[in-house]
Length: 277
Image (cartoon, rainbow, N blue to C red; front, side):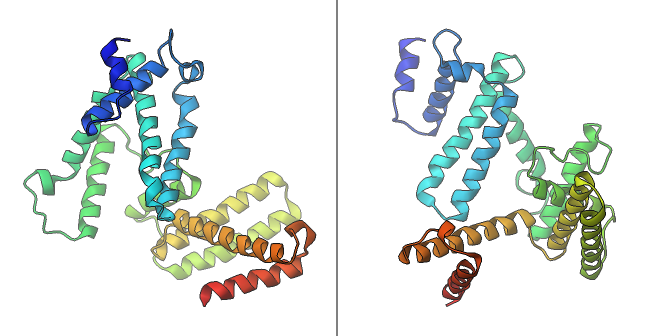
């Protein structure tokens, strides 16, 4: 490493362009076979991918908590993942940072003809969303992805992927026309789950449970709700209310394991009432 590169790495001053160059230089140093970090050197695309997903979720968590003081740091963690994958790509001759930035820039220009082209901007957000999906469909066709469901990423959270699969199918008419039919299907799948529990093995039980979850995602879609976001909110609510239960027990000189369901359930109901005012 040259003195100028070392100076860049150690200098926190400057704007976005300099700081981006600094981050790329840091990652190159970390991956340097002779002078880098043994852990960083040992990683590859597959081993880093779970961290990329984790960092994306932490960004979403900071936003959900409106933790604006943390968001810049969480976005930095996510940006590091992009730079990490890009450095591995450069080392293996697959692509470099310019290729990554160029690809997304070209995509944004192509998908916004009403901003960068001759199309009118006089559209509703809904029409712009429909146009976006039409452009994406054409791109899939150009990539020889003829199937309606081709290209829906396998690595997505299961609820999010279920929603994307259902939206794709709905665009070609494979969808229930009314919410009532979805609700009826939920009842049917719940009955099948009960039957599986009573008479079938774990594998069949897991399949029926998955079917029920898939239809619940579909119900959310028909109601205009995102199942992943809704469940995230419920997780936060459960965490908050159980924390109130723990605090109430602590005031009584207890821990949860010293209590019983009846007491904790009563404290849970009290936490619910307190939240609702």
